Length: 122
Image 1 (cartoon, helix red, strand yellow):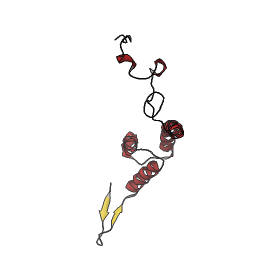
Image 2: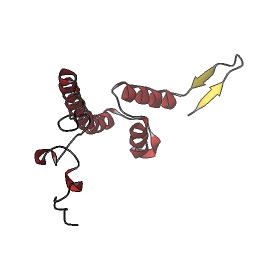
Image 3: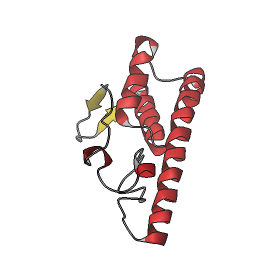
Image 4: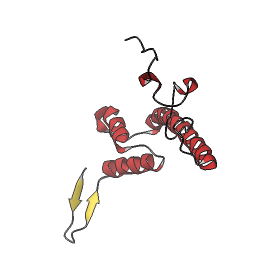
């Protein structure tokens, strides 16, 4: 960042630095992680401040990611609502304690460890 200090120990930044800082803050406000923002800044030619066309490209890309995150959060909210309504924390049916339980249809417990249960092929 281009900064200079005057005789009163006030730091001032050049327009380029202020523009990049504004871009970083705006991106953070909509939930973009710093690592992602850093990647975006490195993609710009000559390390320049993002322009309107850059924002359009990044906005489309980031909007897709944010929409996926929103969908995931909505699923998590639904799982939590189901759990709060039930309160069981059951290993047989709780989505929070035992997510994506593929063996649930075969009954409770460690199905693959029970005697007489066929082992999956490797």
